Length: 471
Ligand code: 5AD
Ligand code: SF4
Image (cartoon, rainbow, N blue to C red):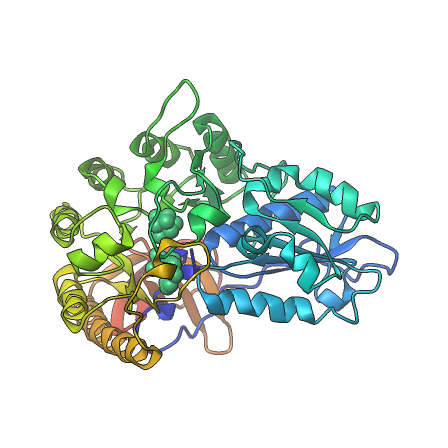
């Protein structure tokens, strides 16, 4: 999926005020000006949080092999692109990047990882003969061997099998954020939404053993991470493959119990696997964050059927009602696609009324993009581009008004913020609430990074809040 996994409210629907505080830069662990003869790498990542985290793992693997990270692709002996093909634009960007090395790749190893690699396969070598490695995410367990081959000078090295039941685990993972760590608990997807490339690019669903997930959570907590974000394309479809047989809720509760873990998030949930047990766990366990990302995609039952989403509008709204009935307020975000083939004005109006009924705190909205090897590609009644744009703008406007009203209602309330950003010039700190809102604030204190503080909201925009540290 796309960046949708990062429920960064400042990036959600509505132009809104952008965050004024950037997350604190990490010390460039492992980044150096490598001597010309040293093995060095540069990875550019496109797409979703799953990709971001895959990159962290690949970086760990490369560091363990003696590579050094460098700050620009020009300095690197190995340049990798971890790619996304969820929409056409994302895929096009990758080809323009690879094109940069047409005349400059001499002596450099250029590789394509991720969804475009899986989708285009060996065709990439035809289009860009200077690329020597093409590997989809389902084959990352084979990367050490594939890297041996490219390092030995082999061209056209591929990892394209989808017939893999392991998950990708590494001894060493480089962490981009020093406060919040990702753990992938389930890879691939067994749904078959008619617009989506993921089942073909990431392969069938594979859950990771609960003992391995819990070991990683303990190691992260021991090394100072207090917030853990569980990742999966359909994270709540998790089923422990080990004899312990934990379900998703069992795993959530067990991770929240790990000493040192203060916050647990998870994304993306599929409505079909979303049930009361998850809401009860959030109600009962303070460490489980009060935020759920539950993509609906469309408000029209007719379009949901054509999308093969496996639920109707009413069934989805029943889940929303159950979430709203929770004892603590739970923030809700969603993904929406406009302009799916055959979407009439009435269908689109259903989407707008669903927005009003769901009262989301943020929505990632997209124009339908036809993708290769997906059932929707051959559907009739394509919606013209201008009409898709009109619907997208109307949806965003609608949602922006909802967010303004919802955020306004928070003025005067206090929230616990996990501080991860600081703008020393403006003397502003920033971080996330448990409900995943971005909250920027002033404070009389000057060492707050990584801590949890109580902040009273004094102002609200469509996409972020502003407040004062209540010392
Ligand atoms: N066109 C537009 N949006 C898409 N998404 C997935 N496939 C497509 C497509 N072909 C969106 C869905 C998904 C999000 C990550 O990307 O809304 O939830
Ligand atoms: Fe794609 Fe649907 Fe699977 Fe999500 S659930 S990754 S949209 S096929």
